[in-house]
Length: 621
Ligand code: ADP
Image 1 (spheres, rainbow, N blue to C red):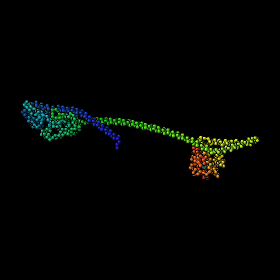
Image 2 (image 1 turned 90 degrees about the vertical axis):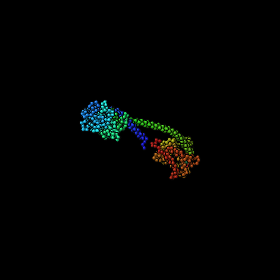
Image 3 (image 1 turned 180 degrees about the vertical axis):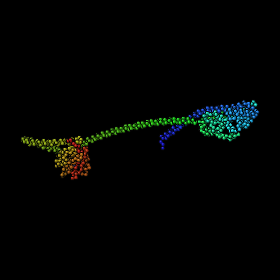
């Protein structure tokens, strides 16, 4: 299927082709019309020229026959024919004929008999012949003169018969006839540039610049005319074939466009005699004849064709110009459209970008709000967590309180005894024992100070920011806080730490809190157990530090294990446990990127594993 554009283009091309063809045709027609009208003017000039020169020629001979009427001898012969007069006139006519170059000159009496003739010497002379049947004779008798083209009956020679009635005052005596040869008349056409013919009243061509045209007819003869000719022997039984001029078109002023047939050679002298011609005809004055001049059209046609071609080329050029202009206009339009489309796309893009930016900034705002909200929530949570940690810690301290009070009471009592004893020994003058007592007092005060210091440090709110924490010290501190409970339970914690110092990446205070919790739970679990023991081991595993607290208690029952780290889960009686210890511990450890798990040891008892990130080297503690 051709596209719409292709179809349009085809129609346009066809239109242009039609335009070019129409322009060429118009130019051809106009040029031809112009050329033909010019040709008509030239033709008419030629016609006038040829006609007048022929007329002059004919008139010259016509004069002879008339002047014969002035010859006395001739008139006498006609009036009273006698042989010597005949001989005399014969000679006269012979001389006259020779001088004039005519074919023959003869005189007929009233009956049409030849009484004297220029050709009296020749054997075929028509002297004495009856030529009354010849039309010129009758014409001359009737009108005074007769002009007839005809072909001689004796020699078959074509010629123009110019007859004049001769007479005196009494009437017509006879007729003088001059027969002029056609060559004589055609002499005047020696220089014709265009084929010319003269047709007589019967349409028979009697004179022609083209020899082959002679004795042809312009119109075909009907049978009646032909038999009339036979009777008068005007054309002496010539075939009288039609010339075969084909009329193509009739123009103004009697001009016609015709096609001339080819009868003989194409050229006569140098002028073509076949093809398309402009025919112009006019009567020849003083005769019943018509003269026709054929002006060649070929040149006019050639010029018209050239002009048509030029006009076609011009039209084609204009079409191409129009096409180019149209193409340029379309190109500009396309460019404009493309620019517009580009602008639109650009605008659209900008609009979308603006839209997205707005969306984005809205989303961003929302996100920021959410982040702020979350930060706030986290902060609140963190604060709550910190509070919880602190609460857990205080709970531990609460649990420790009895032990600590006992721990402080003992040295206080000892202080009291020692100081009392010191005074007594001082009064006795036992300085050495006094000194020993005072030293012991100082020791006890130091120990009490250490305990309260430790408690204070445990109770303080720590930042929770991770740093390198020496594991051994954290374990020692935790055990120190529980020392009283260990002593009461009769347990000595068994430490199993590697030689090298282990450092965990966490907060010392919180790690101690976790350890106090784990150790405290172990002590709780082992209460009343036959062979209580606590093992605390630590080792490094890659970039982690693992701390394990194992007791010899009953272990973790299936009912307890799933809820071990749930807040407020406890199996202890009211007042001794809140159920927060492991939950807080697990939270603390998770904060430092570690984990806390509880399990049963294969040899009995529970084992809690603390997995913490190792502090990066070197340890700047
Ligand atoms: P609390 O000590 O206040 O009960 P915890 O969270 O520390 O709260 O402990 C929760 C529970 O886990 C305890 O009540 C106990 O049943 C169990 N548990 C903790 N540690 C041990 C352990 N070493 N052996 C056996 N059970 C334990």
